[in-house]
Length: 331
Ligand SMILES: C[S@@+](CC[C@H](N)C(=O)[O-])C[C@H]1O[C@@H](n2cnc3c(N)ncnc32)[C@H](O)[C@@H]1O
Image (cartoon, rainbow, N blue to C red):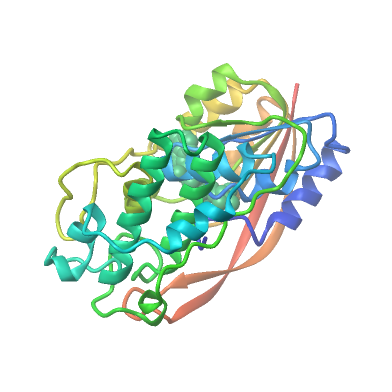
């Protein structure tokens, strides 16, 4: 998934910096507290003792239940095939987010909106009839979220849809299986505010990748939550927004306080923070806070970020960003 702030492309840098500091991960509990797509937890999954993954957004919880929580083989082929052969239905997504229903919105082609509805309803009915277990449920839901996102008619996030269907949005949605890494360990996945969860977990390595600017993930990815939850509500305004959680990490006057509380309350020996030079907290503010709690260090890499142009959906501009990995060994 093309996710804002995803560390997929930086995972080699982050993994090698973490291993330089902590050494072997085999006997260590690794926590990805702002997990998003789960890219960093996935990089450590097969070689750590246990992964704890958490995110405040429900769609992210679904992705992490699959990519991190699932770790043993499951039966999937007959279910993916059956879902792919379903006839579309006019459900919540079609009625509210496709232009054919006269919703005034066009996040998906009519065909794909109806396919999402049919697939989503079938997954829920299989769960209710116990035809699938929880592991299969999260695997199938993740497959739907990933493939619906691939045909979404947006420039990048769900804050707005495009006037005309772009090329990738015209393709028929086909479910491809969302494969996950197999291993023996049992992992834990949470859907909570980081500052509240931190009081109930402990481990060896804590990786932090909070939002770094004012843009709220709950607003930018509202449609992924709507597909994942498939609940009933009245979509709001032009973009069909649902109510969403506002993270204090996106608020300039709150972020240093919540960040310091998190560091203070963390029962982990090593803490790593990904942040960049365009963030709400400056490099020196982060350093000042972390230094209060132990031995501090910093690793830096240059990173080419692609910003979606607001007017032209395909015109992504490359910008150079400095990506920091702040390191703390707690005393
Ligand atoms: C920069 S993204 C993380 C990206 C992730 N490392 C990846 O590679 O996909 C920040 C994440 O923090 C989550 N988030 C924001 N505020 C949070 C909070 N208070 N507690 C937990 N998660 C939060 C967002 O939903 C978002 O997924």
